[in-house]
Image (cartoon, rainbow, N blue to C red; front, side, top):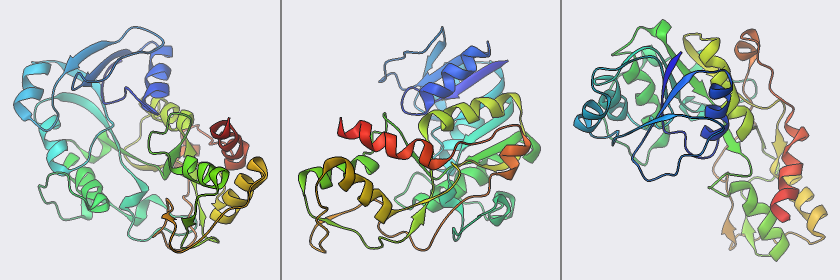
Length: 285
């Protein structure tokens, strides 16, 4: 299969592309030319600025792809710039669980339906939730709903996580740096970077239209993260209102995401506790 990957040179894009290459797909990576490309096999490369339609058109010419995997869809105008100037039969967009109006335990895909959402052509904004909703909705202006898949993940964690959200807790406990946490008992889900990438590659070969949730099985309380950080550092967390604001502040209520649709496609996610605490120990080392 001839596949164009827009983005994909870092974080969970790397295991995704490696999984596609292992399945012997013909992969072209589209970037702005600022990232070094290093995968377990040969890929083609095109360089364009996705926010510039003329740049996309000039880079892709008249090529047609069996599938486009769009990892950097951050607004409706992003999607428009790409899909107005790139021909494909199928399209997978890296969306987010942030699109849901209210996440709760066992949140299901049908709780946000892009086709029912009012489209506004917008650039990337600070309102991440609205930007990702508009990105999903925009794709339906160019392709049939059955040819568009929207992959929705919670926070992705791993050794290559450049945001440092889980590392924050380990380092603050290790250094006894004060931190402000607004809800220690809130339960939240995560997904591991390797599975996040490899599931998208699996979806390329087992395509289904519409939204698909992905998440490790189970959730974890912030207090459990703190307790494990204290255990592996042999230090006591310093929690104060005047401390550094912790990642995941502002989230409300216990959350998890139903993954039955992914299971029906032949993919079973790992248990959260099979890797989360090991990752924290890796950060400490």
